[in-house]
Length: 67
Image (cartoon, rainbow, N blue to C red):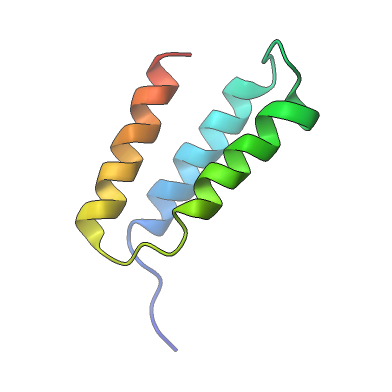
């Protein structure tokens, strides 16, 4: 069994923070924000390269700051 990536916790943390920030989204949380956030993270779920994962985390942090 392979060990989990050390970046896994970082990805989960930023996902949870974005979920928390999105609960007040004007177009709706359950029917708009949450499915789109899930789709965005699911699209990147196959990344294996640590540099690409770090870039994606940085992009999520940038979106978080724009909230």
